[in-house]
Structure formats: structure tokens, C-alpha cells
Length: 488
Ligand code: GLU
Image (cartoon, rainbow, N blue to C red):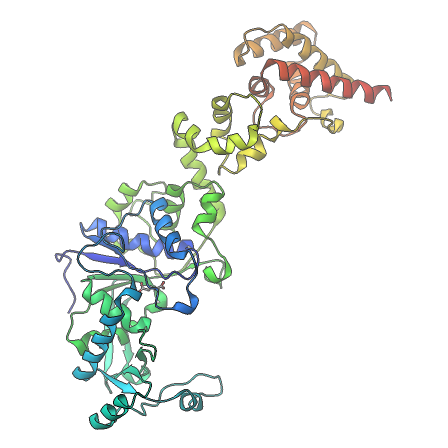
């Protein structure tokens, strides 16, 4: 029996603190968030930390930080009690034990006392063992006796025999598995910790989750989980499994291998909203194929039909492009605010106009970390490659370049009102009077001002940001370099 959408929708994001959050994990959380918000429901954060061996120091804080930066707010979670807590699995230990024991009573699970050696002996040639149900039919008396004697035990799922467990996944349709193919897996380990297989069912039920949204790696285990719901007599939730994000045609993104960490992208100067927009569109497409969308627009348009059935390949170049679109669409003030820390890196101790630099950069970078490199000419100027002055198409050679640079210096020393229009008018006029082409003068001037062949903006813009004194000093310096090389 599936729950109707008219029930209050409750979805959850259940990350494990086993490393950083790669964008595939984050996308899963986003879809659960979007689905809840689209349907006026609640979104719950649950920390699945029962795998103590893989737990990574600091990973829980990173989960909170990532969600906050990505703009995903949860209605309930470890620090936001909604009456269904605790929301951290290690704080729910007594609950799992209690429910595992209840399941034994209900006939859906059993105590197993098999030791390591016995389990080892069940391994096949590939080192995989399938439990042979050795303890499945122990008498109640024997179980009690062994428990009393303090024998270590686990609790295993008693998978019903000869049934087909099936469900309708909201993305993938009907999924069915024959119970003969399901092992009597461990639900509660000998240390009293639950396995994921058990904890996810107990928690989703007790937290009244109506829609379980998670990666396809759980698609084919879900029939097994459903048998646990059935054994308890609980209503099953609805399921939506999401295809993975791939690194390339064959490899999934993986936090174990350091792939595509959300926080690394932030550090590289991506905007959280652009990353979020990009990764949502990696596995979902709105009906009108829009690409740049705000979170509110996405919530409004989000539908299960648009979720892709196949995996998608993460394409950083595309995300970079989208980030550039976000930067261009910002107001000058907004851009200045996000760009300032990067501009500061480029400016150092110099007294340049940061607002002007921001204007120069806004249309010229896709990600903010490009700024210091593009503005490197501000801090690094000195002897440079004189071959850069030679420009065949413009017919500039070194002697002509020297002429142009000296002329530019002369003209600019007479410009008092230092702005783009005034500089441009003076150069154009001065070049004409000297019988030179404006383009030739500006080209030589640009190289002389920056010592670079490629600059973010033309000669006039470079002069504006460098200001008068620095511009004249640089023109003078470059003219001397050129003159020396001609005298050699
Ligand atoms: N803790 C699981 C993971 O990080 C979550 C699976 C689920 O959403 O049920 O993969």
C-alpha cells in the first residue's frame, strides 16, 4: 500500500559522516529537499553514523556547513527537534535493540550465534559468504539458554521463503526480487549496533518518512527492507531512487577517491547557487528545458517525471560556464561583494580602485579564482619579453613600438582628468597628429603598461585601473627597455 501525496510529505537526507560531501551526495539531499518543498512537506536531516570505523573527524560539521552554504534548510534535524528525534543514529541505539527484539517476537528475525570461524567456512571461492540459515530454527529454549549464558549473538532478518518482494519505484517503476535471492542478513550486530539495512527501516518508519529518496545503490535492496516493514506490520514508504553522477563513462563520483567535493568548488570561487543549480539539472530537467534557475523556480517546477533514469556525467566546464552566467547576471554591488576577497589578493598593498577592478572582472571570469591571475599585472611588472611588441598584422615592430610608447607617455602626461573617455580622446587625437594609427599606439601602450600580451581589457582600461602615476612610470620603464634593446 503506497501512501498518497495528500499525506503530509516528509522526506529525509541521511548522510554518513564518512568524509566530505561530494556533489552526488549533495544532489540526493537537494532532491529530497525539493520534493518536500514542492509538496508543502517537511525535510528532515538524519545523521547516519553507525559505521564507526569509517567515521571521519569533522565530517558532521562539514555536513551542517555544506547544507547551510548550499541554502538547504531542514525542518527537523539534530539541532532542530521536531518531536521525532534523536536524529543521530548513535543516539538511537536502545531503539534499534528494542525493535530488533520486537521483530524476533513477531517472527521476522532470529538470534544467530554462529561464530567467525563458522561464517568463514561458508565463504565461496570469491570470499563471499551467504549465510546458510543455521540458527534460523533454533528452539526458543535453546536461544534463551544461550542468551543467558552470555554467548555473543547477532539478530538476523528471517526472510520469508518463496515470496516475491516487489514495489513500485517512483523513478524506475516496478522492482521485484525473489526471496530466494535475499540473504538472512544481519540487522543487529554483536556489538549492539544496527546495520544500515535495519536502521534505515526503523528510522524512516519512526520518523514518519513518506518518501525515501536516495541513490540507486539501494534500489535492489529495497525489496529486502520492505520485508522488514511487512514483518512489523508497518506501512511502507514511497521510494524514489536516483541514478548516480559519474566521473566519466564508467566511474561513479566517490568521496573515497576525493572526487568533486562541494567545499573545494566553493574554495575555487564557485557560487553555491550556481553549483546547486548545475547539479540539480544534472539529473533532472524542467519541462521547458531552462538552465539557469533560482531555487524558488526549481521548487516550483520540480517534478518526478523530469528525473532522469540514466546516470549523468559531471562536466566541470559546463558548471563553470553556468557560474559565469551567474556572475554576469549580478548587480555591480553584488559582484563586488563576492569578488572582493579575490581582488584583495591581486591588489596586495597597492592603492588601486577595487570597484573599478571589479567592473573590469565581472564579464571576464567564469569563476572567482581567475581574478588574481587575470590581475597579476597589477603586482608583477618589470622586465618583460620585448618580442610581444612585434605585431605583424598591425605592422608594429620594435622601433615603431618605441615611438608609440614615447608618444603615449607624452600624451598621457597631459591628461589631468583620468578617465576612460578623456584618455581615449587624447590618444586618438595625439596619434592622428603624429601620423600614427590609433590601434598601433594602443597596442604598444597596452603591452608597455602591463608587460603582458593578453590582458583583461584594452590599453585604455589598463591605464584607468593603473592610474596616472603608475601608468607613466610603466610607460617610461618600457620605453627604456625598448630603447636599450635597439641600441644593443
Ligand atoms: N547513509 C546512507 C548514505 O550515505 C543514506 C542512504 C539512505 O538515504 O537511505 O549512503
